[in-house]
Length: 290
Length: 207
Image (cartoon, chains in turn cyan, purple):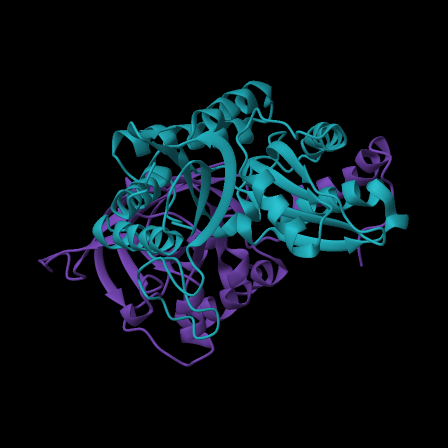
């Protein structure tokens, strides 16, 4: 299959707008589960408002949240795909710019020092474009994530040491969730990276934070910590919006990587309740949204 | 636990009547403000032509569409999606907003700190919590963008919204020292050690 940059540009544009308007089904189901288990009256009212907002966004064809985020595109390239990588990444950038101009969307991206906003949702090294490969034949998957800043500001890295053990990893996560309180727009998905280098650890936390609900860490030790921490964070009483209740998080997600004999890094990256993402597959048969 | 319907602007007495746990619906006028606006006003000495005395400000930067200015809407913008951002980043601006500009009510999400609570006590004000991320709903409470100032900071301009039934919002910080945010944080810290013990992860918090 030959990848057409024009097709990629249109899709990059469509995915940004789609992600901002339609919450994925797993998150909607997550709200139903949290509402069922919530006993605090204020928390139940807040969860009800969030669910109502999802319906209002669909009914009025509006954005779920005003924060258009930092645009992230995850591209997964299957086998037997021919593409010009330079043309593909340029096409994604153009699609992102066009979504911003043509919808229009608030550009939330600025130069980090001058704070100048180009009003395109793009800037130096933004959008973030991650490229991976998988086994699917003649398939390119593009996932778009508008990562909101309230929860992205709830990001932490600690280069623990081996003597600290896994206990310190768990303690780090609990303490950071307490520290963030309502600022990260709970209920959240708490993404935890364990292992790797400092940069890989942070990236793992982002993968974890943006993984669909209902998936578990593919590695048994990671899955165990995931289950333990998921239960623990909802005992803190932080609740939706940090105003009290059980529903602090939908779930804690863990991703792991091997690390160095001297190292024990842990990272936290949080996803707010507006856990937006949209994805599509490009195959010889055309484009399908998933 | 009273419900207040406030026609903006309000007096100090009205602001001090708000108590944590009360609910509020705002009518008439609301101003939008955030990081860059506040930095410009209080770190770089810029002033606004708007009179914020007795008014409420919401921590926001909206999604808007350019339109032709018309009577009642001279801003040249119509609202597309208006929501609320995390307030805590703007903590150090609450007191100057109240003392220099006369603002009485801050609307935001996630709560604010001790400096804000002190300013509410000294000057007379309150914090109202919006459900963050529920912007599609919040947008239905905004009738129009009446005017805009400091639009060179777009989208972090100073926005004047005409509102209708903006709420109900929960009072979570008041002028009597009450803060639901501080209470929830204290409760979480009180539970911390037992939760960590159950995880086999007891220990002090990172320095």
